[in-house]
Image (cartoon, rainbow, N blue to C red):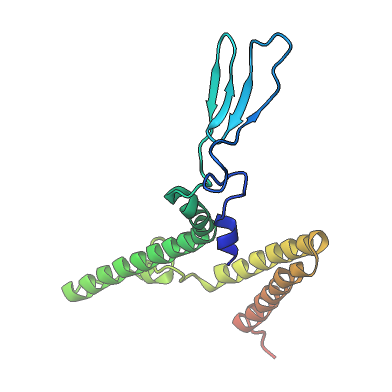
Length: 185
C-alpha cells in the first residue's frame, strides 16, 4: 500500500488529471515584448529570443513512472543482499576449488603439504589458527563496543545491541585464552 502512494504522482504532476488547456501565464511586462508561459510540457519564455525549457515527465502514467519507486526500493534493500551473496558465493567457490585440488592430490598419491590445511596462505576459507582467531575476537569486540557506545550516545537504546555483542566477544576471547593455555595446578 505504501508503494502505491509512493508511485502515485502528485496532482500537479499528473498529466491525466490536469486539463490540457489549463496554462499559467504571468502578466505581460509593461513593454509588452515578452511573456512567460508554464504548462505541462515545460516553461516557455517569449520575446525577441524565445526560450523553451522542456520538463521530463517521470511521474506520469508511463512505465518509468510506475517502475521508478519499485526499482529504487529494490536497489536500496537489494544491494546489501547482493554484496553478502557475492561474498558467500566467492567463499564457496574458493572452498570447492581447494577440495578439488585436495581430491586430485589424494588420487595421484601426492603428499598434501601441511600448510595447505593449516589455514595459512590460500587455504580453507574461515579456517585460521587459534591464536589468530582469538585476536580477531578481541579486535572485533573492541570495535563493536566503540560502535555501540557511539550509537548509544547519538541515537539511543539501539546502540546497546552492538555494545553487548562486543562485550560477549571479549568474554569469548577471555574464555578461549584460558582454555587453550591451561595453567598446571
